[in-house]
Image (cartoon, rainbow, N blue to C red):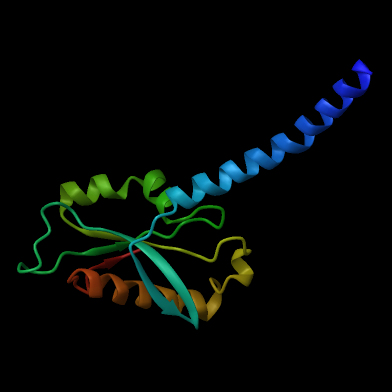
Length: 141
């Protein structure tokens, strides 16, 4: 009887623990994957995370914009933390936008290759320009 309880308990742990860890990961990523804007690119809604330095003033000449693209396995908040562009932006006075891909899709099926990738860049710039007055000429990828 004790062996049966041990086997059942072990089975519950073996099955339940990965499910609990997966759920925890989904919740954790959802919390970290915060965005503060969205655009439509190639018919797909693309969210983005926009960072303006504390010195930013809409009434002054427009600052440059840096578009920081993340790898297929990342998301905007992870790219922000990995790249550390916000620290440089705060020091140098430029704006950074981190556009999102589509979660769970391969980059080649995500609309982020070829002409659709080219379409995302100006739309990310326009989205950032709508949020904060940026100079479209002062754009860095």
